[in-house]
Length: 116
Image (tube, rainbow, N blue to C red; front, side, top):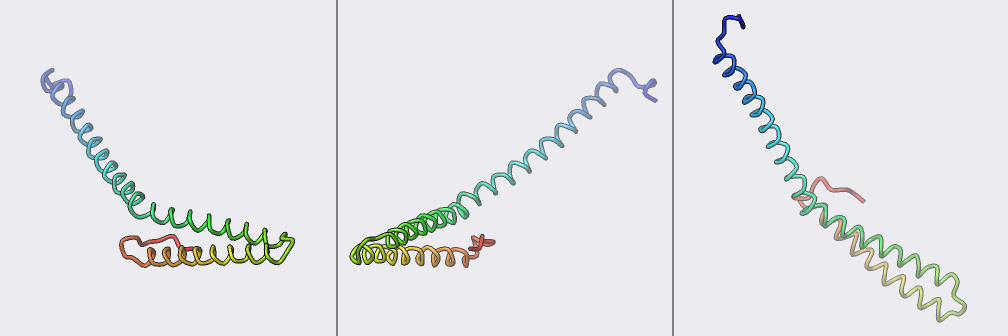
């Protein structure tokens, strides 16, 4: 069958096959880029806020731990009271971060949310 084909037909067949494969690769690349664009948008809009809140929460927990350590090694009652007061102030910030995180997780546009 291939022997009966003219050079022109063979060239057009080969060119057509290459164009078909190029079209398939182009469609696959377009779909992949569209999916990647959506994933990047989700990370920037939704997940970045969560990461920021978790970073603040981590910082506040470390600060509370530092105050607790200072209270445990304090030499007088005044230093103990000062360290405990700092720890209680940090506790309020931790509570605020947890409330912000729960509020963020309750929004429809952010779900599914990484739970604490």
